[in-house]
Length: 194
Image 1 (cartoon, rainbow, N blue to C red):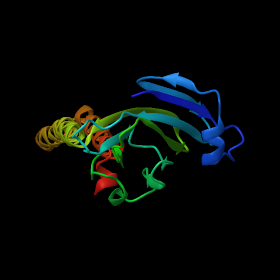
Image 2 (cartoon, rainbow, N blue to C red):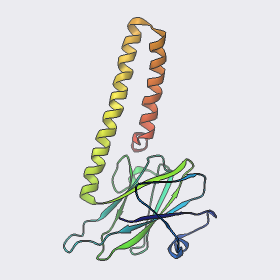
Image 3 (spheres, rainbow, N blue to C red):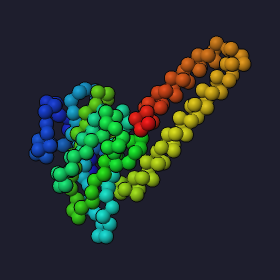
Image 4 (cartoon, helix red, strand yellow):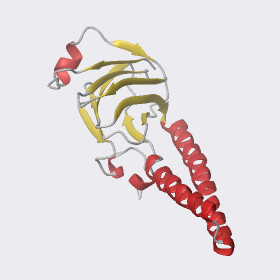
């Protein structure tokens, strides 16, 4: 898929304004617009469906701390919302990442994603068929869960060590590891889906 974006300096652009915009900055992979409150508009090319394949596409957005994402599909008239300000039930899949279901049509088209966040305006987008997206999202959850579980195991180990020795340095490690576990739980998206 083809991704383009622009920073809405005025903060007042709507879908017709985005559709009429002539100049977009092309990007692939991660893209950042720094920090600020101005929204970012993204134009995503959705490929055509195969001859006998009407399986919908899933647009996946990350990182997990994006506040508000609104997807506009002018061809179908659908408007979908996601982001950590919205319940995970709004997503196509209940997952750690933000997902939007986009119907497959016979011709390629563009959908528009409006991103607003109070943190850094960084995004990574990918478009996949529904079955491939489901597998990808489950793999992300397993990998993220394993790293978080390792962090919790190290916290438990250090607590046991501190309990038997009362070592001050181990106590500092416990506080550091506790903060790492909490940060990992929040940052990875587990707090959002629970």
